[in-house]
Image 1 (cartoon, rainbow, N blue to C red):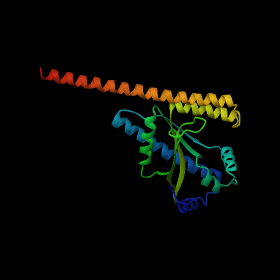
Image 2: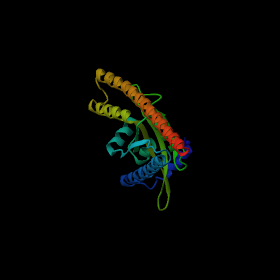
Image 3: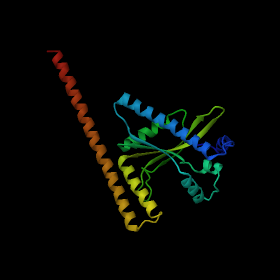
Image 4: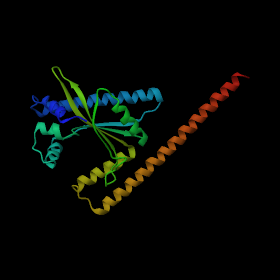
Length: 232
């Protein structure tokens, strides 16, 4: 994680960024950089292991309204400097995987990228939120090479399974529908659904392991049969 001095140095790169359009350009560029890296990692994994850990990649830039609300919630004035310093999820990438094991595999692969700096990690899978929310969050910075400077720009990466993403989407809708004050019975139902998501993910992982083992055994039998035929 960066020291305060490193944060200050990074902020100095934004001194000439005095327009919303320019700052958003940097975050869009950061999304492109990170997105390309993730696609290459996924393609490499397919090439080596004949398997894609990433089902979907979603990207988004936080809206001006959301950024202002978040700054106010944190007690900060609305400014470019505060936006860069305190709002870490302006540029967001969400990776959707089939299995929980894929999440940690991808997190390790991302962490091994030499030109990405991992600033922080929040593991809401091992330590779920009270609501039942589960996801793996990585805050990274990526260097954006401009014509006359290099600007480290933050991107939040969320990694979750298909089931976790479905649950989180429903929670998000309920949160905004009731402005963060949903009825108790809905919160209880959501928590119960989160428990079912855990069971679903564990069952699907177990089923996938059984299918993989069966396919491996079949291949070995076929190879053994071919070898026996050659010696006849």
